Image (cartoon, rainbow, N blue to C red):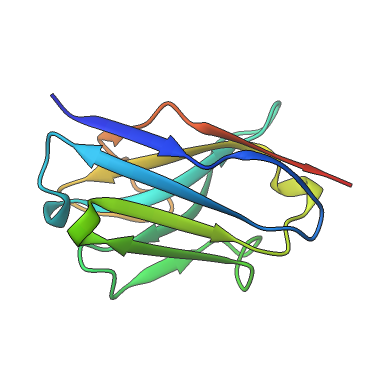
Length: 122
């Protein structure tokens, strides 16, 4: 049984910051590459950022590059997304995804969390 759980979402003013966390159970965390995705109402799901097994390789969508930072702490089985300089257009449900076999902003991850809501007010 694999479980992926996001936390850390909330309501924040434009220009503010949030840090999302994601924990994975049922798998050895070192064995999974990870990603953050988001989906706003009326829009398709967007790959936000992803990270390889060790954290040595990361990718970001153009819309968040320079503002968001993905990281992982394998000792804590936890993935993070530090979100700075938040904009109203960042408002979305944010999902954490994990896969043993690969990663990418367009990768079809096998395991998904239920999401955590991020709302940025203007």
